[in-house]
Amino acid sequence: MRPREKLVLEFWDRSNRLSAKNREYGNFVKDFFSMLLEADIKNGDITTNSLIGKNKEISADIIGKEPGILAGLEELNFLNKGLRLRPLKKDGDKVRSNEVIAEIRGNAGKILSRERANLNLLQRMSGIATLAYSLNAKLGNCVKIAATRKTLWGLLDKKAVSLGNGLTHRLSLNDGILIKENHLKLMDYNFGNAIGSAKSRSKHIEIEVEKKEQALLAAKAIKNAIRKNNKNLFALMFDKISPAEMREIIDWIKDKKLYGHMLFEASGNINQDNMHAYSDCGADIISMGSLTNSAKVLNMSLEIK
Image (cartoon, rainbow, N blue to C red; front, side, top):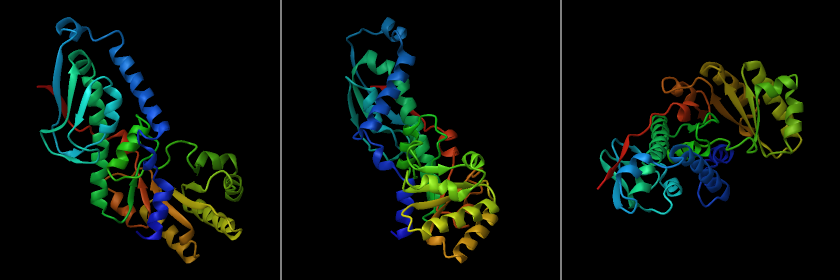
């Protein structure tokens, strides 16, 4: 791996924290699913309670109905306490059509009342992972795909992106400095003061720019900070800037011998149709809100044996 690729991962990848072994993530998942089950089950599943004996034991398969990348198996354990869950695949594995993903054994009432929650979890996370994997495959190794904070399921969506070989970006507002347009407006676009106020709070500082003039001012401010033996790692987020103009700005930065001191993110109105133009203009990562807010779910079903 080239040094710049290592810096990209350091700056925008937090996947190592998205595991049940991490207390913060585990607590988020537990609380999130408690809320989902409380909203869905409330005072009980009156259909199942009316028709099925309360002590009946059953076995069921979760089956993938179309090809994709599996995500959410680790989290499935949080939804099925008291049941016996036997995964037949691993998170990140490829799933074929009509392939059994996992087997659940135990009380029929518990299995049936959690059926939709289980499927919603696996279908959503697997759909996001499949989309991220597909986009990464189309781009090859030239640039990384990253999530944004446009998430419906928070850290679960970020985890799904990472299982599709995408980058997570920030997990929270406390997870690195991102100086956005509204921050700069309140500071009269004084990039030097913005960097000076931020550099002691985080090693990673990213600045959003919306036009060429802002990008050049930000790059000059970063250069001044670096001259003062600054130990921060910087990035520019190009928001809704065309690939041609982005290439022009990056070439200017290279000409000023600043390329090695900052990374570049392309963001805003990027989709499958235009992402190659951004990957060819010098971006290190492409962040896409559609990864998590527009991904199609991966079709699955739960079937009683």
